[in-house]
Image (cartoon, rainbow, N blue to C red; front, side, top):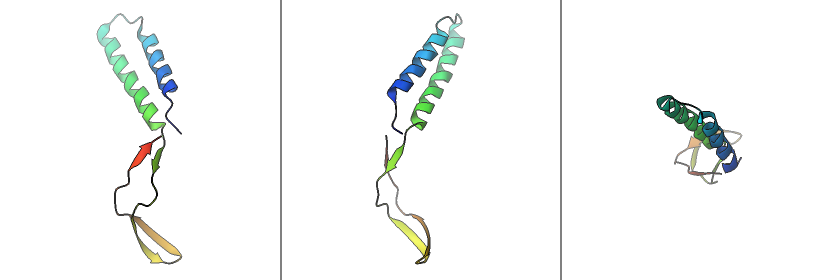
Length: 79
């Protein structure tokens, strides 16, 4: 799934709305940091990482029962 900026924006607006009447500045800062961290984490984890085809692999086994793993790092793009 592609990252949806509008969803993050709504989460941020909700966080700010929740804090607007908080009179204790230290508590508000702590709540803001915790809630914003969670919103950013949720936003990033909602994305899909696409990896280009063609990563080199090493395999073992017979022609009909292969197993293996990549032998180089793969790089992807968060969509």
